[in-house]
Amino acid sequence: MRRLLINASAALAAILLAGTAWGQEFTFRFQSSDPAGNPNFEYQKGWTELVAEKSGGRIQIELLPVGSVVEYNETLDAVAAGILDGQICDSSYWAGKDPAFGLIANPVGAWSDPEQMIDFVENGGGKELMQELLGSYGLHFIGVSTPGLEAFVSRVPLEGVDDLKGVKVRSPEGPIANVFAAAGAAPVNLPASEVYTSLDKGVVDAADYSVFSVNQQQGLNKVAPHPVYPGFHSLPLVEVSMNQAKWDALPDDLKALLEETVKEFQQTQINGLKEADQAALAEAEADPAITVHNWPEEERAKFRKLAVAEWERIAQGSPMAQKVFDTLTGYLREKGLLQ
Picture (tube, one colour):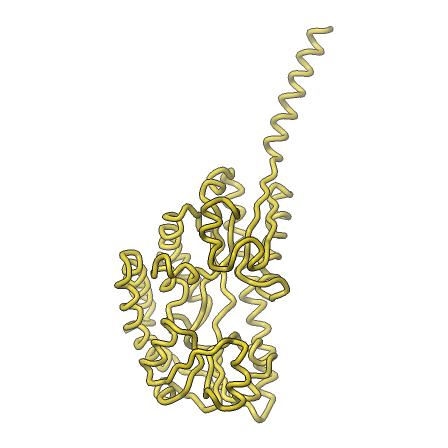
């Protein structure tokens, strides 16, 4: 009887040990580049909740708002060092480390729809480039999302590229400003907090600011009643990535689960923000004082062609930037988006 009890106890211990291993929880801390309460942050939190639900609690991700542990442009190093486990960030923040990040994250004028950028990442070589870039810093690329194609606000009618000549455009310094200058516009560097008053007072004629729903909500379309929607200049790539060693420690089923749920989060965010834009668009179009302009594809192609010269300049900055340029332009030509 004593031997039977010992054997039963050993068998029970083995079962409990196996059950513990199967039910092991992985707890991670990710930092976002968005503040708490921001719609993008809320969509990102939805992803962490989806991960917990679909993994049966085996993965728990604590999502921290921007600046919680390190500054917005320091999370790459923090994840590499294990201070954070992962990040949800605009990849252009790492352009100072390699200009390839800036080129792949927001190639000015490349995209007319979020689905174009996502197809490039998932089927056109983008994810392999992102993994190569992030892998050199000790990170693993899980997937991508985007807040969408930014609209463009203007006090003057803009029907195409030629109408940008002489227009004073609020734009951040760097590639976007350079492309606007190439189109004949006069870029003006102003902080976001000054956009409304600068448009209202005529300090600038137009502005690179945010998506249509945000512009409408903040009254920009009232003071600059010739918005361009959909926009033509900026669509940021937001990466979901984590420490490579911590990724490697996950079982294959949980790796697949993270990739699948990022895809769900991506579509939820894009569709949700698009719905908000469409509701704001209907409101704007019902206002007789606002005229919404939608550039035809040939005008978007003209702007994209101007942007290529800026992409070429960026490509000279590193071997990886050149690799991004070659892959990106090859994809665009294949899809008929670049002549």
